[in-house]
Image (cartoon, rainbow, N blue to C red; front, side, top):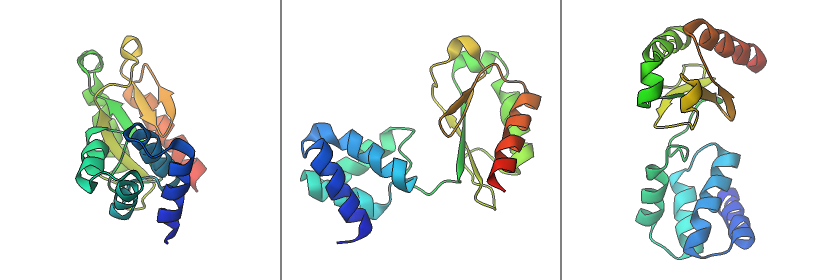
Length: 156
């Protein structure tokens, strides 16, 4: 068994092998590996005795279950109408310029991936950005750039 298969087996021991265990197992893999590899999704399918297509369908439905490698820091900007009304496009432009990559891309040094998210649950404080697990509400383009610069300093 590979390390990934062993880890998925451990997660199945912890969460069970019913369909209800799928999400916690997928979240556990993402927490450790930062994304769901094809190998991991196949291992989950085998452990839960469900189709790989079912696992893949679930993984690709949810924004926070990445199926491709991402940068060390994943930056997600909320794209709901309320954040749009608070100029989220300006935030995205500033981030793209600062990071030198477009939404959906990872920087060449693999430090950052820039994404949008359907809702981060902070509509009353938009525009909002999530970096890894840290929420940054009431952004301005300058605040967003400063936050990225701070993460960049921490990564060096």
